[in-house]
Length: 333
Image 1 (cartoon, rainbow, N blue to C red):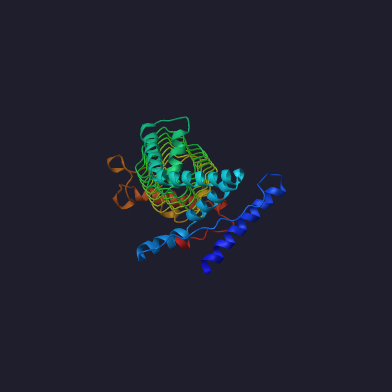
Image 2 (image 1 turned 45 degrees about the vertical axis):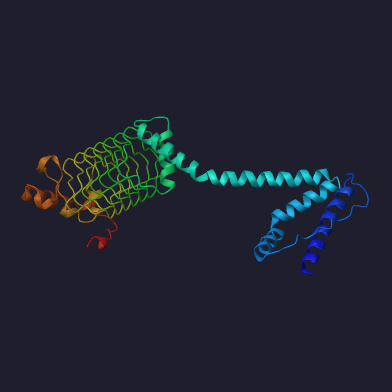
């Protein structure tokens, strides 16, 4: 009884669809009768289960509709059903090949990066951004001399990457891991490096003009001869950083940690800028020996401590450079 009700319901829906088409001007032979489908004899339990499944699937319903419409010359309805079937087949085919296409695309992306050293067209930049977006580790990549202008690599892992002489103007590297990265002579003008980890990175001779380095980790970083004109270094950790001969004109050092920072020969650095920073009395202002050509912690340096203290005292006695609002250095205690 239940099965008969379902069959009647199906036939009724088909008849309604045909009637709707008639009202739209399509021709159908008069007195179309619903087909009386005979249920095949089910001799075994297994056959019965198969038959029951068949009758309750969209496939069985689809074939019923085709048979019914063929018998009643409903050409347009048949075309619609066949189009749906073709769409389903295409979708299944597309899904089965998706993983393979994804692997091929990934291989092609890595190939572009590995073979695109020094690329200026921006193709490598797009490939790197795609890998980062997909969550891949980018540490150790060889991207020296590459065009990465306006690259969006926020939170990317680029630790130990070679970005020397790379063009990173306006790049978004906020919260990125650039620890131990090679950024010698890189152009980072107006880039966003806020909260980035640049510990032990080499940024000597890099262009960091008007760059955002607020709250960045710049511990033991080499910034010698770097251009930091107008850079925002507020709340940055510059512990043991090498800033010798760096251009710090108009740079914001408010609440930055200068403990052990090497400031000998720093250019355009005023006493007012220094006093906005934290632990500036623990910084180094006189020439010192750098072991094996590398910047080393303060306790391993050959420093003329007396000369350094005299320089600190000189800065301290410059009352005109006292800040109106002393920096809050609690975070560096």
